[in-house]
Length: 293
Image (cartoon, rainbow, N blue to C red; front, side, top):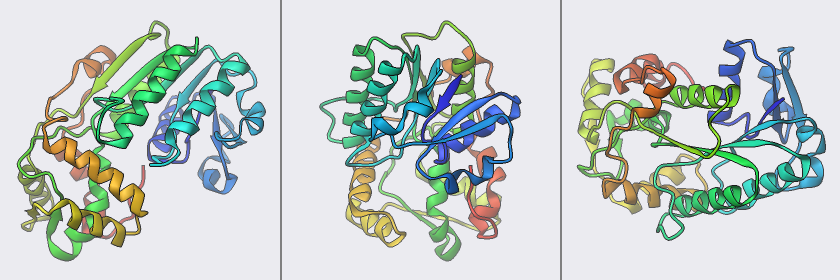
């Protein structure tokens, strides 16, 4: 039995759908069954309610589980506590292998809290005695859909990256790696890094959007404070907006500029170009479709 935590978030939903493509049986963990309604009619998906922060609620979720896909909400306060709680409960339940969604460049000394937390979780998992695999992607192409309101209303992208190069990756490529690792053997103790196939500046991303939409989209290099205000205006909690800005600060240093395709090659995955991602989601950037995994 394979358990997917964080199964109704962006990556979790995409991973569940990847298992559905293969008609494979999987168990998913959610705090609220209403969030998993899109899966309730699939006989291959077992929905279990539990809270990763409350181990006493996880007995049913972890019973008979051999492998866990460890994902959770990007909570700037509790992500590390949440995932470490799950690791401890999994060890007690006899789980053999945990595959963790991490990030590029985790570092306990990083000024970016998410990089610090991922490093802390990775170390705890490695020390737990459970077999582990870390999947470390570059930031997701899907994050640019959060900027669709300004693309739609102002023909502009307001992002504080300057002229740094970035190589974002498609969530659907990431979950293909997850599926392969969870359904085959020999991945214990491995770290799999991956990015998209294109290292681009923000002007390049604006140009890709321009071609797809048939009008000029401008890139505006805003200050971190302006970006924070924009994220909060979109409904993002202030502490999460601060954490996102910390990641932008690292990206401005070139932390995600390298193209990393060895993992794609290893698993026979064709990396998704950014232009293909835009084409697949062009209706989101036009405002005629809601973003989904």
